[in-house]
Image (tube, rainbow, N blue to C red):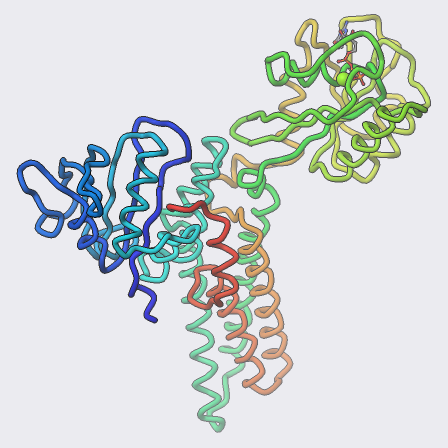
Length: 460
Ligand SMILES: Nc1nc2c(ncn2[C@@H]2O[C@H](COP(=O)(O)OP(=O)(O)OP(=O)(O)O)[C@@H](O)[C@H]2O)c(=O)[nH]1
Ligand SMILES: [Mg+2]
């Protein structure tokens, strides 16, 4: 079956109550189906309606001819629609019952329930957007901060596409030039042209590498950065969590062992979305519940992108503090010396910091909190302010394809300078072009498409 032979429908608004609910249809029968279920007082018909004009009326169930809800209906005719097919959106009252009833009715009229992301998938299959732009739609839906949203919008606008198109054009030019010589073997490539090609490939490969390198920082804007606050009991972990969140999220007492389980919440530092975890104090304990809490704290250390390792500044350095240092040795971390408002027993600059960055802070005076936020941002997004101006890569699929494209290019360059047969060079060049094509979706498989679109919500 041709992809667009059928008409899909879904509720595009979130489950629950709201001001309006939207049922969306897309496909060849969208307008006809709407015509069978929509009744307007002044006899406006979806099939005659101008594109993008709101019609006022009721949805009527053809089975019993009863009006279901008062609606606004809009027809968006192909190709000027989200999917490039005929699209109908029915705006009903925002109860889940109303949207569900309308969906049931249009399904009975021959529409099929849409798969997750299927509207966007159709937009891709009909060439309205490329694959990286389709992924950007998902990133926009999932964006947790304005900066994440800005990056995704730039990708949807086609920033990455433009960059990749420019790279592809340069590679195609080189590949075509060399392939012409395969067809005419007597016409050898001159040494000067060869040198020029090698230089060009080196430059393009560096350009791809630079793009790929932006991933290390930029991905946090898409995926979020996970941070675990860890330390022995009573050093002030929960107090710090509350201070960062500016709310009473975790219980704080002067008893060691107050926090027994992981506590998670979300934070935004300069647009960087952060999932922050407060953990149970790590020490040796005989108590079963505490032991489990401590196991989870250690697990959090393993899984977090970044660690805030806390030490109580008002007490001498203890064995547990030493143990913590070795627990976090392999992790990216900042050391925090807490309770700076009390007389200090830890002198910073000795073994505690172990060459690591440290911040002294107090939740009582607020000293050091901003410094800690700055340290978190800078440790993970060093030099971000310069990078953010250009196109960045936030998606691991794109990074993997870029790296593989750069590797193929480097192999191609070596083959050329090693006087290997031009056919081998050509294979590597095509490999590189294919990898870049995978990002935009010029080259794709059902498996890749399924993986991407199945993570969308239904109705998008
Ligand atoms: N003076 C002062 N006291 C603090 C500060 N931070 C925390 N405290 C106190 O230290 C005690 C322990 O604080 P918590 O935040 O519960 O410590 P914790 O590390 O979460 O402890 P556990 O959950 O038991 O591991 C409480 O009495 C806090 O009021 C600070 O900056 N200055
Ligand atoms: Mg605690």
